[in-house]
Image (cartoon, each protein chain N blue to C red):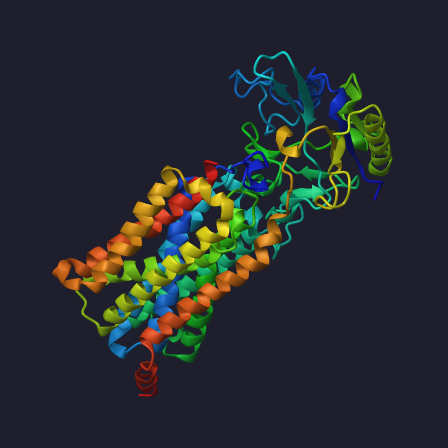
Length: 301
Length: 265
């Protein structure tokens, strides 16, 4: 092919830029935090409840921000509702084979669920006077049901963006089926990092924090493995990362965002009290840079 | 549905006059320049450079010369939307703005498009772009409005050498196959049809006669549907979710009992 590694090199770039990168980041945080909050609420200790509340506080603002970012990214923002309602017939439009269509509906449903859980957590923590909202928070049966469904939607919101990129014809994005998997694992990892960071800031000492940190270490290892698998799956297209983006991936994502946090977890005495906070901040930075590299390296081809 | 209609472009008779580009812009009222900015490409006689929101036809100038320029040839090709039978843009469009017409062509309804640009990334040929005036994705409509009135598209009407031919797909395929045969007979063995059969995205309703590899003309040798990754991407994501869930449960396991106890109290 005259030195061109894939037929995907003949497509045009959609000019998805910083707004999309930020959406991928905050959407990942929303989905990941909800999932972790659900996990802590369903499987954690009673004394970890504040940590679970924290997890429920993050998704709703992140979903609101995500929706705003997505609307602003449209060339015709006032037509955002066309994603859900067909403008000619005013009938709902739902194309299950189009990740963007499915994702729009998922974001709407997840937004509602995250609002319900947000209010439930506030009520459970006695921050709002409406005790009735406690019924939608675990350990009530309804609360468990909502949190289980919300966790699944959270996963979907965190991962569909990777599948959306794969269901294009752009180099890198559509040359691997592993982007969705990478985004899901990364979303869980950055969400755990954010929760640790916020909990540390509040000087919480719940035992669940240690569990969360341990979970995050495992997630980073898994993310590293998925990233390597993704690079192998790219085949000859991998050469697109023999560029400044590849360097950013290596330094910013792999070294700063994965290997350094792993090293700090292995030797916590290096930074003492600052260890957890620093590790979490590095993971968050790495997760953000991962999305920067994925979006912009394909835009630049 | 009427019989499928389309273009057959014989690149061997294109003279690079750009009458098709002009006719297209004139009929579709597309701006000649992008906001008055005229950029010279420095690439042969090609200053249009690409298909996009305001260039729905693009004449490519490919110079194949030896270094001393004593020997060589021009390859000229008027490029356009392929109106694929399996159209990637139509498949991914979340708003339903992209539709298939009764002529089996693919049209973007500008009033329904919200400029999400998913179709731009999905098109394997790089045909679609945002029109800066409308803020919506746009491309060749195969002059849907003219066809509804029984007229042929502006570009093929204007083409002085019949490089761009318009008609029913069946008729065009027959004509194109005869032309390939004729070229083979007179010694141009490199001639072949690109996208005329159903192997490529179910068939391109705008197909080409080429005399070099597709990539020389800026065409993908093996264009694919974007949804080829949908099942595998979803399955791997599911696997990722499963592994993340497993890691989470393993790290928080055996503690649910205390929560259940508390609920009972």
